Image (cartoon, rainbow, N blue to C red; front, top):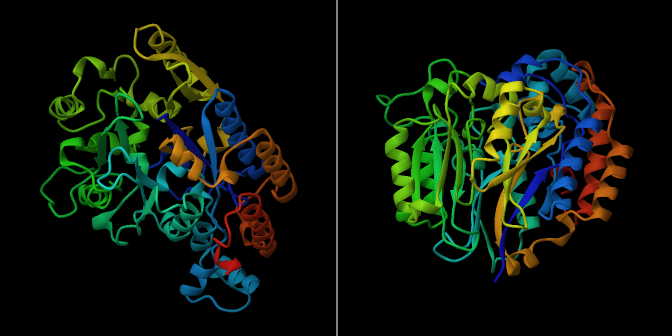
Amino acid sequence: MKYFEANFDGLVGPTHNYAGLSVGNVASLNNAKNTSNPKQAAKQGLAKMKALADLGMVQGVLAPQERPDVYTLRRLGFAGTDAEVIAKAAKQAPAVLRAVCSASSMWTANAATISPSKDTADGRVHFTPANLTNKFHRSLEPETTGRILQAMFSDSKHFAHHTHLPDNDHFGDEGAANHTRLCSGYGEQGVELFVFGRYAFDYNKPAPRNFPARHTFEACEAVARLHGLSDDKVVYIQQSPEVIDQGVFHNDVIAVGNQNVLFYHQQAFVDSDTKLAEVQRKFGDKTALHLIEVLDHEVSVQEAIQTYLFNTQVITLPSGEMAIIAPTECRDHPRVSAYLAELTGRGTPIKYVHYYDVKQSMRNGGGPACLRLRVALSEAERQAVNPNVLLTDALFNRLNQWVDTHYRDQISEAELADPLLLVESRTALDELTKILNLGSVYRFQQ
């Protein structure tokens, strides 16, 4: 049976804005309070999706969250009509209003952790939405994310869905941004790498000092248990506290993997040699595993953060060769572009680099890898996926028309208080659920 990896990209929501909400994310903080371009952001994301589909990849779409989140504002004591709730929040707690308007669900690498059926004890694909407890604005996402994923992957014969982990920092879970699967082929059992920033119950272990370590070891263990993974095929790796303090808020800012390739920076991990030896041992065929280490003198950590060299997608093309999907920031940086040009001639499976403009996402702190959730599937499992969320030329055109109809060209911080923004967002999402055949996944529809 044929197996492959599908990418489900987050559709940028109508309230895309630059509020600088993500402490530890350098790009997010540097662009705080700039005017955003929601329509352009959504179209840039759709263009990347279409480009990957044109390369022969299975490409899907993951719907955004309802924003502003007036339900949370009501829980926080703001009363009245929706318009009154928003107006009161804007006056009394503008930082809270900015948070509940966030379109951060566009970065679907944080949506969930996925384990393919070849890795799990019951032979189903397992989904656990990330609780994202470290950031208030992101902690509002998991319940709706779970409903959307269940609407996309509804067949219980093939798919198993778990409730997100307890909403507590001890089990802080950032999803697939800190998870990598290595395998000989998508249809073979893989080694799942869970990367964490700190130990929640052991304060004597190393941890960053300047920026938060969002993902815990305990969360990694819990997800591995929920998914029924074999201990022989799981590796837990701690992210270097030093690189977190430099702005590497997720592992996918410093490392990325695909099939038999792990592409990572020299400073990415704690006890790197020992842990990578464990990866090699559990992978089995050491000669088939390509560990591509980028050294400091080749690309510094700061250069990697500036360009998102590792927040690229490494994909396997229908030919069997691999390509890196990189933001144009990598192309425009002399040292990084030179490194990537040299990498394709090294004799590794990576043969091509394709550059795409996702600047609206990059300015808010997310590159190509942030925008996609990877799901390895068999052909039978693909047939069980909601077909309306899989990108075709017709769906691409329909979604572009939908964006043109419902999205604003620009949003400033002051415009987040406009009560019409909620009306526009709900109108757009109501139509989107019909286009993608998701049913009533949003609270305003229930």
